[in-house]
Image (cartoon, rainbow, N blue to C red):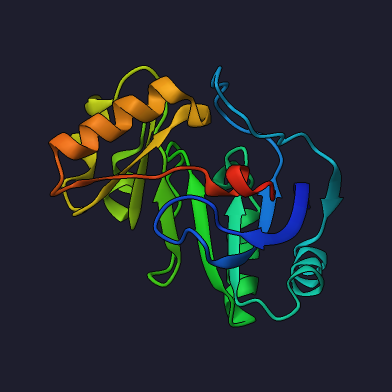
Length: 191
């Protein structure tokens, strides 16, 4: 059974795919306890993989992109089965992870790693996208893990002015590799 916080249809508000319509499957629970976390990933209900796929279909009205997020979605044993079922249903699956739990993923699954305390180097190497949270500083200690990526996203924690300024200055100082990533969904008032 999957532990579900919520399933909803919206737009991707962050990162490379910002502005893309997507169905979000927010799984409950996380293996970290970040003090700045703004996500309600409390358990709301238990669902089978089949029921979750049906809920995605019902919520998205044909939307092909599904974002599996959390908490930490890869902390649940059934997440791999959910990914496989969605892919069989011809969904484009994106996974947003803190990168701490090694999980083999098919090549067509988009993986965004947003490191916090630690990262499994195999997940960092597999990442299609890296999103560093800027909270008073750019966490440069994670940069060597993402040498294979041409672009690193800098996301100001909470869209706070001070964090935006730090991220913007850093991106402007390193324009070949870094890009500002704001939580645009919060600006326009959608989940």
